[in-house]
Length: 451
Image (cartoon, rainbow, N blue to C red; front, side):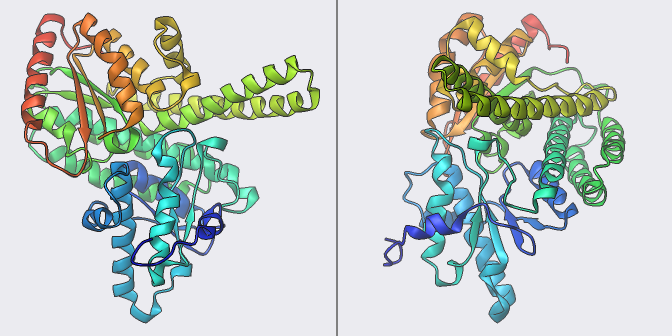
């Protein structure tokens, strides 16, 4: 019960799902700033009115309509949508029509609480008379974030491709920022430049996305990287390199993690954060694994009809993963020919690391599948420290911490757990400063890894 109203759970079934977003205002939460804005631009290129909400300004609302037991990103995104809708109501007054809005909130299957955000937020929206008719559009890891049902069937494949380009391009801009900001000629230059670059890339995605003109998009990205390279002061010596893993929202959302990358940079780090496209690739890879398992089981039981269905799924997800990795490699190759930004992980390689070390399994699922082998990969690449960023009480990241701590201790690699909720931890900066002292000692002994 919220605001004294009895919750109609039928609403969760009827107003959360895959709805046609044509002629609607698609409202997207800001997780990773650049990636979210480029994704919205990709949608706009196909004629969808997509906009990214301001974030973190509605945190008090998010805390008011949650109990505190929810995952921290749930509080933030709940506050974001309520704050946005209240502003729209005030701005439009009697012209405000909730049926024009569709709130975009994907989900995952498995034990992560992320799978319940859109259900809970549906209940919260239903407690407001003016917001009951706002639908929540969702994509799920269960089908590899398929866009079927959101737009016309003949546009689905093209939009999915361009959306993936947008996500990878957003990752590149982030890695450009982390590469140049520790070495910028003047403080603030890199942040200002990346904000402008993001808007330039938005424009090019809106203009050329629907045409699927990747060359035009890559030309603009090349131009941006060339400009960004000039911000680097070559007289600044190399710094310790820190790898960041963890829960995708909090590690990507600078307000949620209290600007941890800037804090690490303050004490002398050059950082590389796990990418957004890594998670997209993982969902496709995981569906491919499931299809292979399903095929083998049904073949053993001589269920040939079902086995044939799984063969189709295997072919679909294998082609999808091949395309994603091909595009990612093409864009990164172009970017790295200009500046030595960090490469991204291949999901298959991460699973090989887990099998080799025999410490966890992709069968268990969750982001721990990515974080644990990524930490090992960082250490093998010569990084000088690793940080695990996550919401307080996050199960996958707690698993990561419990498994990886003795391993990095044996490797003599500095490691820091960085859990976050809405509170300010009094010893946080001291912990980061201590970690960076250890990373600097490692750096003096071993040097900075080559990109």
